[in-house]
Image (cartoon, rainbow over all chains, first blue to last red; front, top):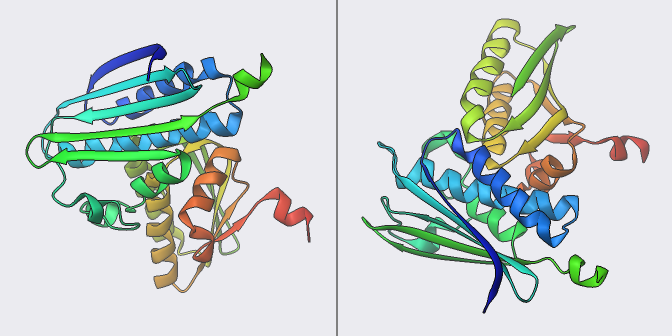
Length: 146
Length: 109
C-alpha cells in the first residue's frame, strides 16, 4: 500500500532512548488526529517493542535499533521496530503471555500489550540476525473530520 | 521519574510522577524496596496521580513489590492511575493480584 508520510529513526539500544522512540512515534501519529487514548496506546506499543530490543536483542552490548513509522493511505499507522541482534528462537513461545527469557525483572507482557494496543502485530526473526516487529492500527478520526 | 515516600501508622505511601519504563524501573524499585525494608509497613500504597506513562516494565515493578508485601504478610494498593497507566493495568490483568482503586471506583461506592 502507498504511504502518505514516513519517518525513519536509528538509535543505539540505550534504555534512555526508549522514551525518545515513543515520543517520536507519538508526535508522528498526531498527524492522524488520534484521541488521547489512541496516542497512549501507540506510544506504549512502541515502548514495548523498543524495550524488547534493548533488553533481549542486545543483552550484553549496545546495538542498532531502527524505528520507522508510516501513515498509509487507508488512514492507518504502520510502525516497524527492527534490530540486528540476538533474534528469537521460538517466536510463538516468545509471544505467549507472561513468558520471558529476561528473569524476574521482566513481566513477560510486552507482546501481550503490543497485541492489545495495536490491531495487527507481526514478528519476523532469525537467531543471530535480528528481529523485525511490524504493528499497524487504523486511526480514522481524521477521515471522519474531513 | 520522581518518587516521594511517606510513612505513618503502618502505611507506606509512595507517590510516583513522570514516566515508569524499563529505563527508570530499576531505580524506582530499589528506592521503594529500601523504604519497605526500612519501615516494614503493613500496607504499601502506590499513588499514580502524577504518573504520565507506564509500560509493562512498570507492571514488573508492581509484581515484585506485591510479592515482597505478600512475604511480609502485608497488602498492596494502587490508587489514582491516569488514563494511559490505567489501560496498561487493565491489559495486564493485574487487578486480579493487586487492588487497584481509581477515583471512579471510589465514587461508584
